[in-house]
Image (cartoon, rainbow, N blue to C red):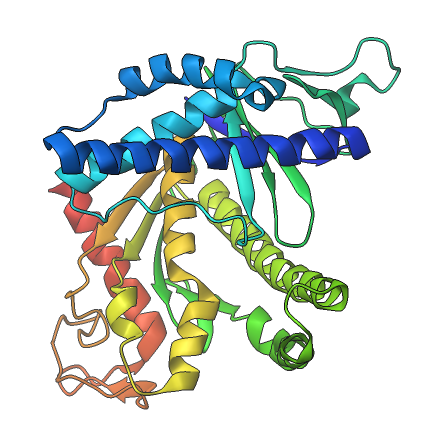
Length: 372
């Protein structure tokens, strides 16, 4: 199994200069060969392959000596990314590859050198360093030790100026949780983030909504600055720092919640939400809150963690009427507006909480799908 370990790194001034050079060189190589492919295709209707570009890269490095200062595997990875973008364009019709810009303030490159190590044997706190090609040992505060065999490292810079290193490792053995014969159905919402079939409700933290006024104030300050100036760049970093803080809060909340769900339950049943259609409304506040809860990220995390730790995940179809069916007698009532939070079954007379009833129905339908 493959797993990625994330580290925040603290390069010195010389290492920062070399990282910035690598960002520029990988961007140059990507744009150079994208332009070459476009010209070649217009002339002969033929597409250059990845192997042809790699052979030509050796000649290009002899002509442009400054390309030899950076990690060669980073340049090769840039060519591979271009080749994958072309394949997706012709096979999956996703979109034609675009030229990379240096004005995005978000950069990264991938190094596949075999000389990537964690730890410096010459220093007492050896786990607080990562050895990267051309850069040498870079400081980090994270003490986690990567497991398995390191395949590659991705070095990135966020808009707020922070540097990160992602180590992709293979042959990682994940611990398996003990079985406890507990099953749970989860209904996702906006007022409450998640409602479990046992009646537990997880409050929606609304991280973006709490920081919205402060973010709007900083963005107004940014709009008054001259673009490209030093004051504009200082304010831009403040905006990026606040946006990163909101994102980190949301990810931390989701990771803790999904890990707790996986640890305490053998079978998890969730609904397949069409988030894109949910946001296609004229209600701006509703659309903003749907973006803030991040249903897609919750679904992604619960999916890969269930695979890691040997849990069963059942996804109920998006058109299953979980809020219309009485979980006691199975009677299906008519469609209800979102204002109706409680209703009484006309057949058995049971009073239902809309969300808890939906979670129980999702659990029953998910278990039925697994048995089938």
